[in-house]
Length: 136
Image 1 (spheres, rainbow, N blue to C red):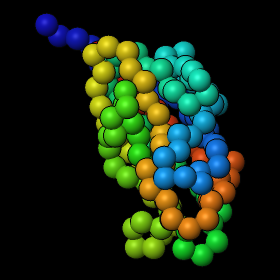
Image 2 (cartoon, helix red, strand yellow):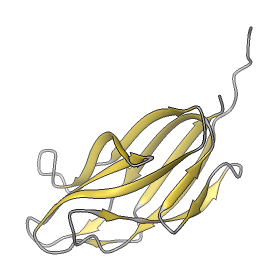
Image 3 (cartoon, rainbow, N blue to C red):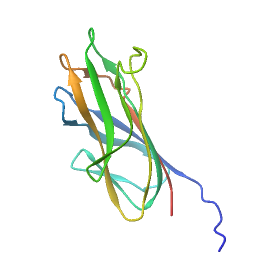
Image 4 (tube, one colour):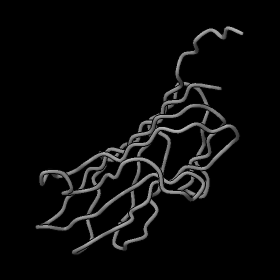
């Protein structure tokens, strides 16, 4: 049966926190979304309905010297996608954390730091996440 293409839903979120440990979950807040398809609970959990998703987290840190960290998306507690963080690829200052996935039922997405060295990094107000969804 043919199903007409659906326009994607898009949300922009800001993320924050003081990531000074190897296991740290970032706080999330919704800046805007094209329709109300997601919500944030417990300050860190992005509650998502079923759908096809692409998510990207844009980090922006102030870091002295060689302080490094790694960030990943976690879906229902399982690490997914490509690593992001600071100073990982060709000594660039930041890399984006990205993931694509499909949910057949509701799920919970979080952004977590998974590795860390040096002293604490300071996040700027420019840490953003974009979530795109096409309903199933």
